[in-house]
Amino acid sequence: MRDDLYGQDFLLDDNGLVAIAASGEAGVSDGIRTVLQDIMLRLKTPLGSLFYDQAFGSEIIYFVKDENTLANRLALVAEIAKRVQMDQRVVAMSAAASVVSWDENGVMARVTFKIIDETHGQNLVITVDSDMDVVVSDVDPN
Image (cartoon, rainbow, N blue to C red; front, side):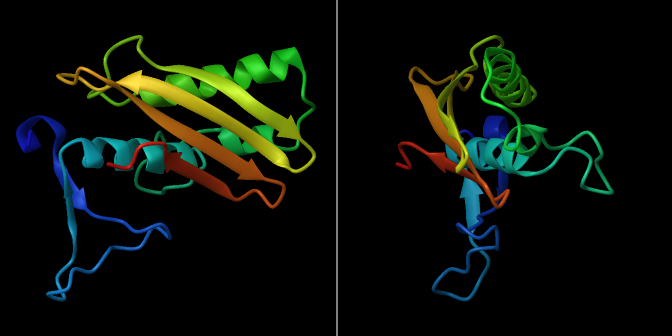
C-alpha cells in the first residue's frame, strides 16, 4: 500500500457513516480507496457547506434543475473535472467527464482520471436525482 502517498482515513459506508469492523473498531481506508473516497466526498458535498472548509465540495447539485443544453452540459463536465483535479493525488489534466443522461428525473455523468503512480485509470459515476440526492459510485470497487 502507498499510505505515505495516498493517506488513510475512516472508511465510510454507502450512507457516509464510519464503517464498523467486526472487532467493533472504526474501519480504516487506505491506498487508492482513500483517494477515491475523498474525491467522491468532494463531488457529493455542496460547495461552501462545510463551515470549516468553504472551498471543499462541488457545484454539481446546482445543475439538476437546469435545462439540458449544450452550454449546461459543458459547464457540468467542466465542474466535475475541475473538482476531481483539485485532489493532488490525481495526475494533472487527466480528469475527463461526460454526461450520460439528463432529463426531468435527474442527471447522470461519469468521470475518468488517473491517480499518481497508478497504471490504470479510475472511473466514477455521478447521479443526481430530482430530489437533489447526489450519489457517486466507483465503477470498479475492487
